[in-house]
Image 1 (cartoon, helix red, strand yellow):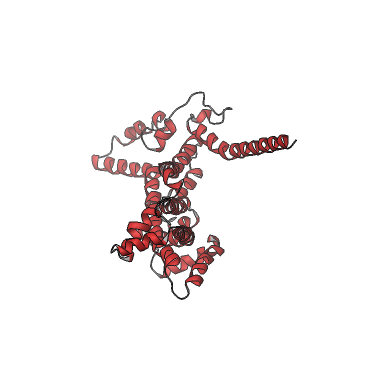
Image 2 (cartoon, rainbow, N blue to C red):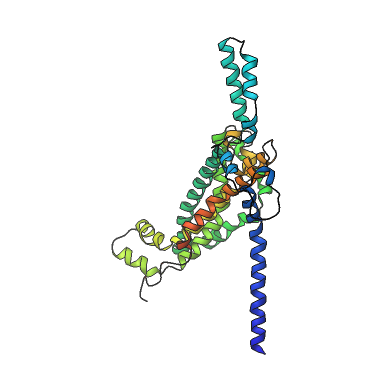
Length: 323
């Protein structure tokens, strides 16, 4: 009887897990499926496209022209209209039309680079500060350490919408607004402040699991405190460090609110969330291209998790010291 109950519980548990996986994975699978379809086939039933194509990705990355551009006779018609104009006016007219077309296209690569730069820089700065801060919390003794450690997490009591206006006013007064480059500096500061509390908390707890006797052995061998951090603590904490970096990177990569405030006036500095929002509300709002853009946007985080998986599955201190 007890055995039957256990079997029923296990079966119910696995069914629940399966339903949860389907619930989470289905939207991504559907997005992936639409990205491999032609625009006319976007909403055909079934997850497997009948006519799979990479055209949406080619158009998105600028490798091929869109069907609309290929079928358009616009260029020939323009040349007919301006053929009687002087050469100088023809060049000026064509240059103006080219600039207008450049504005109308969706510069996915530029947005991708902008997001990669912002997320990468802010995550790296946050990680460096977190390593030293977490080490001081876990190893050094000084007055007010516990209060400072607890107060760091107070930042998470305030949502982004509450802080948006005060932060905007602060950065305007500091002169970190008025150009795309200065707005990027403001965003990096905001992303670091957003990710630092959890980074300190995660690394601090991990550093406490490292036997202090390993550090004592390094100090006896002549290492300074700084050398001990980089030669002993950091190598032994790679799983936590990589986890913290991925977490901080994801915050910067997906952040929309503050990016929409600080870089909205500067289209050349748009990040991917802002660019995708513009794509969804523009003349390029074609479902195949939108889904392809969403898939490519998710790739960096997926690739990072895949490459760093071996560092995330366990610690490196087992057997490091004999107690």
